[in-house]
Length: 161
Image 1 (cartoon, rainbow, N blue to C red):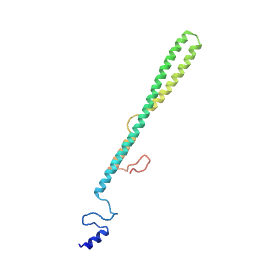
Image 2: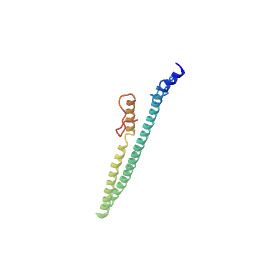
Image 3: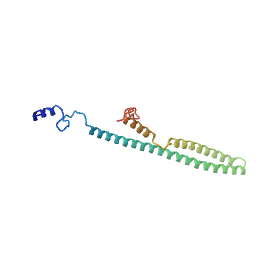
Image 4: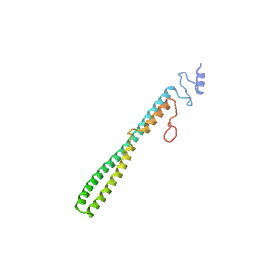
């Protein structure tokens, strides 16, 4: 092949003598594809880890709130017990007025303790189990997609990129 025929071949997008494509519209090589895959997998792993961190932070916050409410329920329960004990003492000391007021206050405090305990239990149950379930499910879908079993779908219903 002469220099003139080589120039014509490279101008039309054919491979140059070194084996590289000169045309910008040609398909990427294996090395470039492996590089893109490596970049996309590392970005995917970073995104999944960020999702897990956000999910664990939210569950930790809910668990803390629930524990605080349960602590408050315990405190109100202790106050109610003290008031009920005082009511029993006052009930024995007098016939009606003072102990009746103490019993009413004690019942109200017990009701508050019960409501706070139910709210605390609900908050703690939201935070368990302390695993990032959404992130784990997403990672499993991504592994299947990499194996070619199914496309990875994000929470919005679209395909992940």
